[in-house]
Length: 629
Image (cartoon, rainbow, N blue to C red; front, side):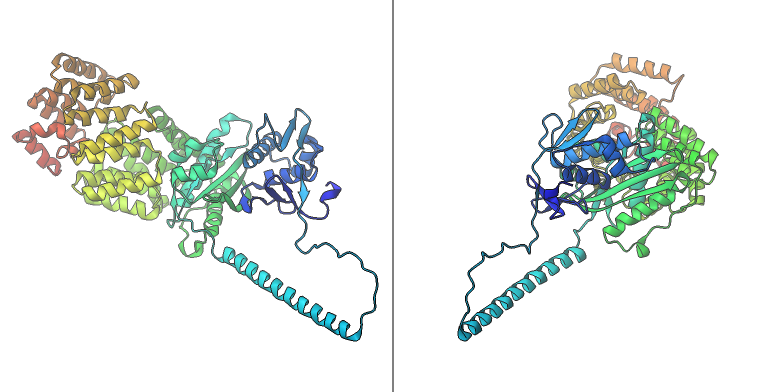
């Protein structure tokens, strides 16, 4: 350390202050977040400001003999974090200069902050012997001055003590948080699934506490590797705090570093690092979640969830993380790939409850997106969900999948509601459970409850495209077509290539009588994906517009496609309903009934089938299904 810094461990540069002992960084009195490793690097560079600090020096003094962390990757991450918090530009640095292949130099002027008790010594005066009276007066005045100084000091100290005590016992109120994607410190891009999977599991673990709102993975994924300020991200997600960190895997060992940041002030509240064997990952995630929850001052011992923390096969855990990685893509190919890995995890570890829950969720989605017929998807949902709950009754995901099964396949509204409520009770931050429950409520005629439930889902996963879509679909089935159109357009503002949103927008325009716009939206969806579902509803728009030849052409295409992949009978029925061919429409709806498709539950609320309501065959079908009209 330069000699002129030796008088104080707190130094200043620009409008920043750095404590060289603790590594705490602040700006204008506001504490700034900086993880432990970047803080150590900054302390070293500032303490030797103006000098070149070689990479070898940094490795020796910050990382020491530790070989677990990849030094080059770790150092690059630390430098990025330092530059981010100082708002420094690598090309035009104000603080941190890079010397390629050599090291770094802190270039800004650095000054020590003098201790509060240091005052300038009075100038010497010539000796003079005072008279006894003058001496007594001087002693009296000196005593009074000392008393005043002591009183002022005690008042200042008491005020400081009260302030510190207030901070200690009245931490910022945190009712919601987001876990940003953990930064992958591995050199191997193939390990990206590992850091993503760990992020997803930490979100799930924190959400189990149920006493604060935790944003879902699909919304935070958009901030992966972002350089945007945390307060800005927190504002967009509507949260009080942010958790961020790193993950590094080496063989069968993994290290996680994490820190909790108060969003509004960007103030660092807590940081820790954890080093574990991969077989103890469930325990590690639980420990990290408890530490964060404790910092938020939750009485963990009273409210902590009962979760399984048994050791797991590292290969099974790796397969599970890959499954979640592909599941989160929410595409047909992604979910199918996820199923392969979840299935592999269950073979490697037959007691891995979360892997069975992943299988159940995946088959629900494959049916919902019309990639698998119900008779193929839901029997697998039943087996996987029940096995997951046999191993761990507290898995919210498995209860939600069981709720979807009871509603969409068993046609058991009360049983489904019980499972959805149980899932939400176990994990109030599980957005998908709120979404699926909202869909059921809308269909059985509890519209206000459905709107409230989907609003909760949006708060938990504000950037989720499927949830945003359902937030438009609920007004649609409630016959609020303007509200539906407005929400579908918001969904497309998030991603204009989300083809299914164009389909639902086409349906809403058709009910408004704007058939030209309906056809345009249907054409856009079909060009983007070519899925039979999208083609069918374009056929419906053509039929409603009186373009019979185009509608019949699409029906022929759908018949051809059905020879090699699943085409939902309900969607074919909609085209015939648009053409006014009631007999064929009802015949196809009966096929949907025979394949146990949940779409027949919608017959009482979908406007496309309103012209069929007076038909006795349609009324018979509705009675057999038991849905409201």
